[in-house]
Length: 111
Length: 114
Image (cartoon, rainbow over all chains, first blue to last red; front, side, top):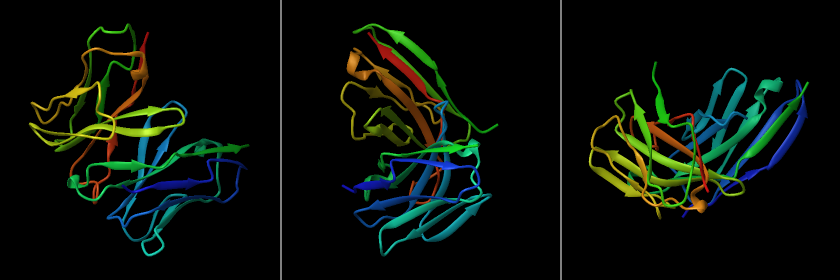
């Protein structure tokens, strides 16, 4: 089974700072998902990527397949970015429908 | 609007009283899953379904049942709930394999079993 580790577990920063959240996994994967969970509890899928880089607004996700590592970056951070960010990878087999989740990174952006 | 709808959003009940959490999606997705989220343990998969009448266990299926009689619905059934099933539950759907498709999540159901 794939093991997924995120760092840091908690991150507090000031508005405007550049944020990086890291995700490492132990077994080769077909894709990696980044999720955002706001304090209200709802979960939103931010990115799904299998190679290279994806960008959406101020959010950038990168993945290095050889190093089994992905990063989520937030540029010009804002208090509304405060949330828990979770990475997840599909387990090999099972129609790629079984996900293994990281423990999440709690991000707090202070004004 | 494309969405995954869970009901109820909140429920407090007692041990042993059967309950069903409904999940419905309007995107014609084939794939659906149930997750539970607990402090310190994160998100864990309970059951998933790849199509009508096709379901399989996730990592924590004990104490739960599911059914997939229609494409849009994927109810989670707790036949005899116990306090250790107190948790935040999420239903999710995707149009294909999670190797190449994102998931859409419901708003969550917070269950308290006394």
